[in-house]
Image (cartoon, rainbow, N blue to C red; front, side, top):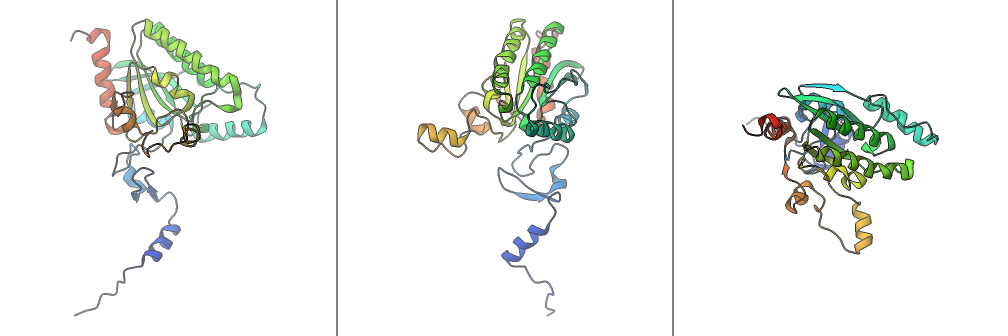
Length: 280
């Protein structure tokens, strides 16, 4: 009997080999911790095992979700009054990485010939934080949608209010919510898609103002961070208490939708709720 020349590597040897693999070749899911080749992420950038949607650029989300898209207000950016050098350096880096001048991409898109106003927060633009220019872009989007009788689809992915801008950042919560209220008073549809993560002031305002609230699987959805909550209530919350699945179980989310099914789901919802199709 021929003896095999292959010797099974030990656990320590396998760990050592993993450390030498370039970062872009292998990926690890932060939810189920499955390790797989990056090519298995596919066009939708989702975990092949649990369906978790990895964080993606706003411009990539446009490509995988909408048939057509025309950007608006692309030149709105952080006001010059914010002169802190570290902050300006972060802004410059964010612009270079995302190709956006602010943490939200806004425009008019189409799904199956249905026009819709679209807002997509970019988690790679200073963690999709809500600054004064972000609030201005989203407010203008809702005002445009109200004038043109368009539904709004907003993809949220944010670490919350941008503390470098202080009270100006926090005031965007009320500013955007006011525009959402006017859009709602006009009898128009607002759909929110909660992506990983949706936290802080964004959760406390327009992310929860939608007529229909969807979420991607395993997205982190909450207001304060775990450590802040633990220090406040002096208790340890459940491990998954801020997962989209838990939030849905307690009635704050209408449906969890896989990224691969998002385009189909949005198309169906828009068809059901537009005025021309309201009665079949």
